[in-house]
Image 1 (cartoon, rainbow, N blue to C red):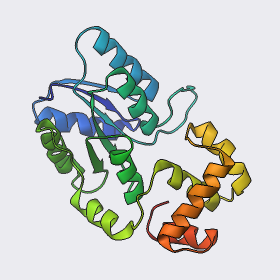
Image 2: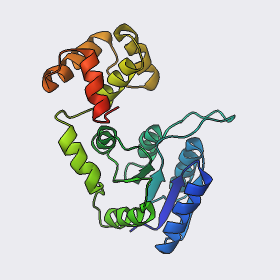
Image 3: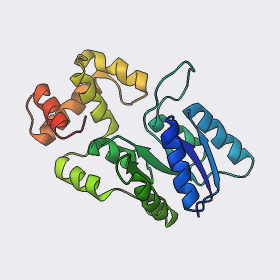
Length: 221
């Protein structure tokens, strides 16, 4: 059952919209916050008080402001929340549309559902929550089809980070320090070079420039 839900969304209108959707589903024990740090504190407090949340609904990206935060994105929040409460169900509600990124959230972070912010997203939120209630994962069919068509390679968080950094003009030898800053492992130069060669070999791509173009065309980055 899903009785207690925590919403983490920094845009007030989106936050209110999710609250309204949960209200329509007769889920009344709903808390909401605008910052990831506040979300983690609420999860810890609820667990200590014996009233743990059943579901975390979080965005992926949060705008920085004058308040310094330790946790600045939804992916990091998911990891931190699961360290406190491993059984916590997670539904990501985000504008992110890259199939590789979404697949990584399911494969590497073990999320239970994903809903993209778009037309009819309130309806899809209800479908996702109902699926999670039944202990099923909710993966939008359109994005699943696109992921199957576009991904000949099983992309990992490390792979996407490497290609994104290259696309942003970061030299190969400088990539390890960026990976370390993000907490992505392995981050050594040798590991980066081996991973890059593996990706190009699997996709039958010869140059880094071709790889970047391939990933942009397929919305992997």
